[in-house]
Image 1 (cartoon, rainbow, N blue to C red):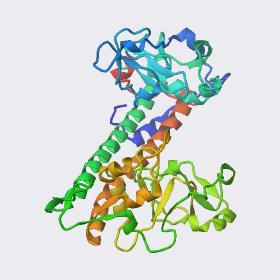
Image 2: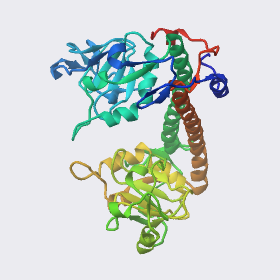
Image 3: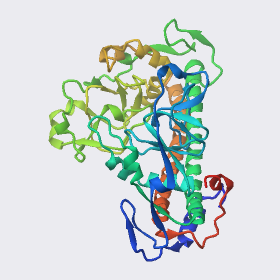
Image 4: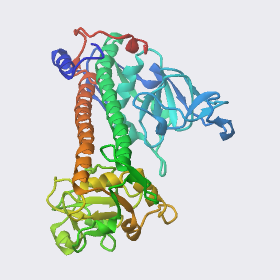
Length: 452
């Protein structure tokens, strides 16, 4: 199977593969596995190397010594990304070792693409007698079990002794390689999709900065004498308080009416908007929370409606904004740090969102941050933030242009989600032996074979 294999190719491979033989052995965390597979402890099939952090005096950012990885914060899709090096490493991982996070979050995985130094948050797993990518995906499938294995009241962690007792199902080396090939091809497609999404986002950021300074055409510009910098000469400078609708609570936050934890539910009639759900142009609906109809009626003056803009008062980047989606009929400000902005007829909501998510506005907002620890900007300072104001027709044209990039990002996200679901399904079927690859014509590429 080549790297360029399509989704249909992957599903056909799974569909045509031989079903698993009647199982006569069961493995905790995976269920039943084929009788011709062996069950081996991780200690027998891989060298387990817990990390050990060297003195901070040996750290540097100049590339001297080995790349130093302390935990999963440096993990990429497959390989970790170095920003620190160590001149006197205490524990080293070799190229192609599986790197596992052994402190919360336990079980995150990467593969070393070069020799490196590892700190206490990681362990290196060096396969002795099996394919390293097969081990990588097997451990990924069992991450929930590894998380439950973790102990500790403050920082959950697993020890070398815990890992040594972990049982691994082991088919023949050829079957390991075929399993790894199928899953890895999907994984590569996921990575490619994520890269495309990232490129679209970066392109859009540059275009946002450009159109907020020059407009869509070759407009003559002039310096505003404010932190907005230069804008087209036919644009105006305004503030948020001047573009708000002339209606009660058109510009407000959830202060004094924040929902308590007891008033936030997994189901309900009114969608509660919380701080973590306000992204940069994206509304996060992965873990929706709700208020009851009674609570909604009680604080209906904190209601918010689809199509309106919500702004975050804290967490980086401060003053980021998104538009409330059409998904639910009723919304409610759920916390003090989310602001509702209902614009007047002279300002397009989407154009406001793109302005709020630009450096022209962020650098103003940062100057107003107050408080120690979790700094925030208050409602009065948000009202004073300066905005560029093109004619309404031009606002709509700019928003339409930028919205096309958002749609492309959404398309890539949808495709990535499909691939993720396919990958999860393949992992469940192939790593348990429910679907076999023994009689399939799967070509194992060198990049898989080099892992054992």
